[in-house]
Image (cartoon, rainbow, N blue to C red; front, side, top):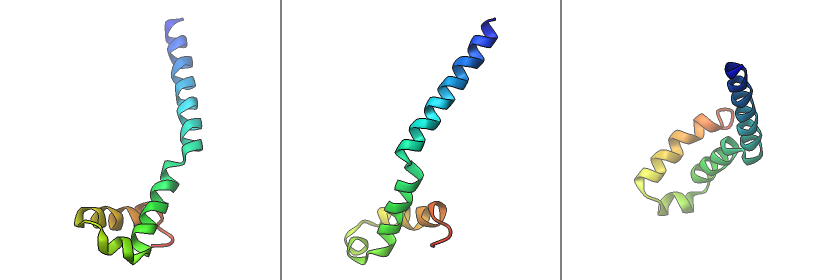
Length: 67
């Protein structure tokens, strides 16, 4: 009985996390940010080297068809 309750609670938590991630769309937001960092040169010139590296590495990972 205890195992069944654990399975139900785990399934409910996974469902809630999936719904939350579906609403927040972090993958799409990260892809949009990375595309903006690579696409617009004014932010590219003014940003730091670490930010440029993160943008360049995140762009092909988040949006492989457009990079």
